[in-house]
Length: 434
Image (cartoon, rainbow, N blue to C red):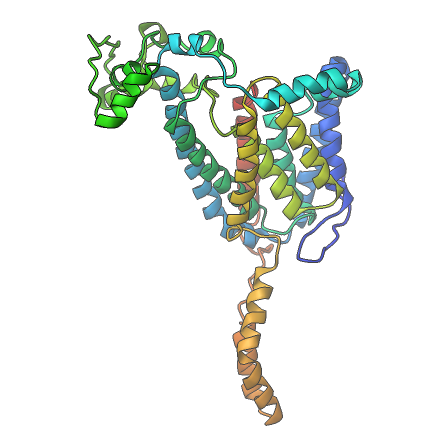
């Protein structure tokens, strides 16, 4: 399989129909799991094999390994930054679920959501075929991740601007910032889930609130007079009564996590095991992490590749958003906030990688500064001065190609491809349940 030749677009973007066709083909083949599992089991391995073969065949002809090498450090740093924010997010997810206890989750009704009302009303008005299409599980989190992986690997076919690791670093760094801001948002104010049964089904935290909530929340949760008095005194004046104690395992240096994670004997004695079970949580986690990934994928695709396929990706984003609301994984505000946060964050991280030729902009800026001197040197027929000024505009720092003479010629590309494919496999395993 071969990507069609890229089309350089005004503003520095690249394009071509091949990558868009591959993306549509990938989504179509994977959706066969819903309508023809047998055909899906035959076509999906074939598609993956063709895509992997195309990548391997193109590796020896790729001309930008030097640029990839320079982007390797920012890429790895972005990966570690994302992992640290995911750890913070997992701690926050467990905390907001555990601190109020399971009784609060069971008894607190969902918030009124006009977006849910709208979708239910449209179910009554739209044709059944349209409603079934909106309900269909066409795309999930792992699909958006895979679409970005395809976009990144398309650099081997010159479909997007090199380096691909630069694009990957920007995507991962932006996602890390987004996940960190998300965790700060939902841990600041605890909102009830749109699925009241979720916490009881997935978590085994105590049914009663943590002692912090017993002191600072419970006495003022529903009594208007108590809330008014709290505002007047600005002090937790109410007697909380006798505190219910929690199970406290011996975690050694990690004992400070006990009040955050609230473990129970039935969940085992490993704090790491509790974090792995946190998953997406059972509160309303504003804003939607699924939608953040979807929007960042669409933004990356639009800037790096463009074309009709970008519109297709954005349609998938919108479909995914209404499904998040329809299936009550999130409230409408979570999806709306994720869309504009994702767009704004992507716009702010163009310094890591950009489809625009930033070097050209810098050279034009330098040319404007020396234009008068250059004109005068030309009038004076001072060739040496002209050359000196032009060197300021275009310095002689041509990169040495990552050529056949380098003993790392195959080591670095091989390492990059192997590491990236390993990350893809791990990402699919971790997101297989959505």
